[in-house]
Image 1 (cartoon, rainbow, N blue to C red):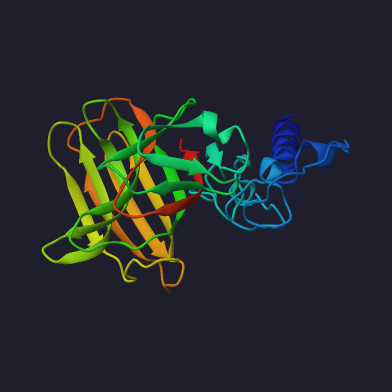
Image 2 (image 1 turned 90 degrees about the vertical axis):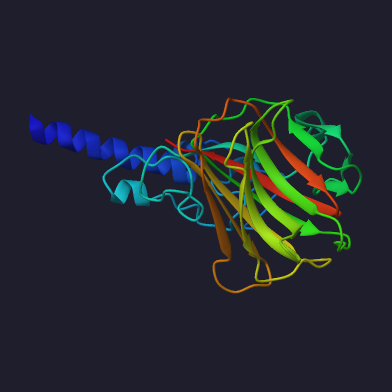
Length: 277
């Protein structure tokens, strides 16, 4: 009897892994197309891609099953915790469809959608773009790719940062890129928290200075009960980039997801949020 139970469990893991890595349509032979925008150009459209920002044409999602767990539907190439079941893609946006302007609404500043990216033109300090749909509370991992479109001036602070759990009074928890007077003008990856009490920020100097045309991958790991870690890597740089970490002395109140910007023009090419178990 026990052997039969183990065999059924093994069969269930294999079936779930096949469904997650190949999609229900392929497993059951249904003829539904996966046409549309392909952000990572791997031949799999975003709507069917288990790693829409990382090229993985084979759509492999096997590491959880190899660890005797259930495949979670997030591909091995991008899974924040490969081999551990439970992650899922809560939000993905490549700003490539007309409805992007309904999902993202500016609070202040000059923002636009060009069919491939969310663009920002410098204006007031702390210009804000807010996400309008449901969002995870955390723990989560948020990743985005940003390309600098305009000159980054010396003499004034400049930034692009993702913001979670912010409200009308406080800026919440933020992760991104900043040019700050620290004590001379330097380009940094910057983790900040403003919940009305310290801590307020942590920063590490980037290995590649801001310049027009430079792109950066930015990643934020956020646990409301513990800490925020913010990392960035320039497209032109070798290695893993730099990381700033900030321990949270109190749990931030639930708030909104958005982007804060001022000082330089940029293109936000995609954003993805993984909900963590």
